[in-house]
Image (cartoon, rainbow, N blue to C red; front, side, top):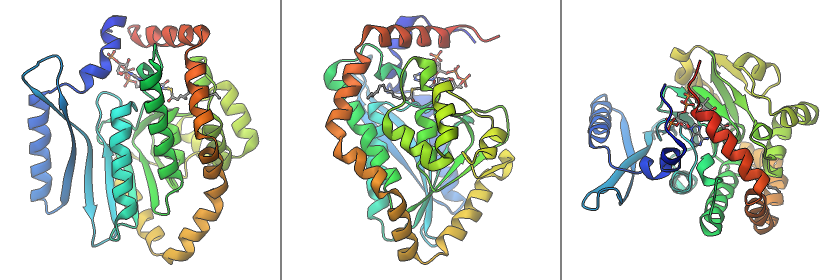
Length: 317
Ligand SMILES: CCCCC/C=C\CCCC/C=C/C(=O)SCCNC(=O)CCNC(=O)[C@H](O)C(C)(C)COP(=O)(O)OP(=O)(O)OC[C@H]1O[C@@H](n2cnc3c(N)ncnc32)[C@H](O)[C@@H]1OP(=O)(O)O
């Protein structure tokens, strides 16, 4: 596919929030059709000023929410085209969703998945790290910490239905869930930060250690290893791999199973397993943010990120 020049890549975040009337109309129609299928289906919208067209408000639907209150769970679908990259606005909205979930008495669990084909999440939006300003960088990193604390530290049941690529921050989101099911296919999952010339933060590392163990993490992080679904299954990075057409069905089956466990006992058990890991970041949030700002402002890191952005723009073979 044709790649834009660096300038247009740098406008990606701005572009991503601009109004796309056709898309919005299509999505609204989709939402309506799902409601008529007797599903309680709601959309979450970001409304903000579209600076490329001073007269038009920008509307973009970043999430679809399907609630099955009678069954006690919901499906939360990422919908930030093209790759569900995690930028400040997306994370802020995700945090609001996570707060609502935590406060809901009717919802015991959530299936996290993507509405976009072949992609769960491409991880952090690289443009949030490239040539960042301190204020935005601080807000961004704080929002990301918040997401992880809310997700990894949640008492609710989270099942990741990974329907495509899930590198870096995408892998972190998946690992923060209680159970992972991945679609078979030419997809990759893992913490590949070293390939971008950056070090995975300690809480990414700890989440991976808690998921696949110390030795496998040691290799995976240094090599920036991206696993195929079969490789991920072999090291317990995912718990199941399935054909795409049964992904949500399998996730729902698991959800029913997890929901059937006595809630308080399950919650106390989960919390006892994760509390120390979460507390470690909570105790170091400010210094972790400062490290992020200091690290990403280094010339060497900016050079690596620039090279990575340029490589992403090269035409695919
Ligand atoms: C104490 C020390 C503290 C240290 C802290 C320091 C640093 C912080 C580290 C933070 C940890 C970082 C975590 C991360 O998550 S970094 C992000 C890593 N993500 C990736 O490497 C994924 C890159 N993307 C891809 O590999 C592919 O895009 C794909 C996900 C496999 C999907 O492929 P495909 O479907 O073929 O899509 P395209 O490649 O064509 O991409 C479509 C457009 O999306 C743009 N894109 C892709 N990924 C990102 C991204 N992560 N951020 C921003 N933009 C992204 C891509 O450029 C295309 O744009 P275009 O359509 O305009 O060309």
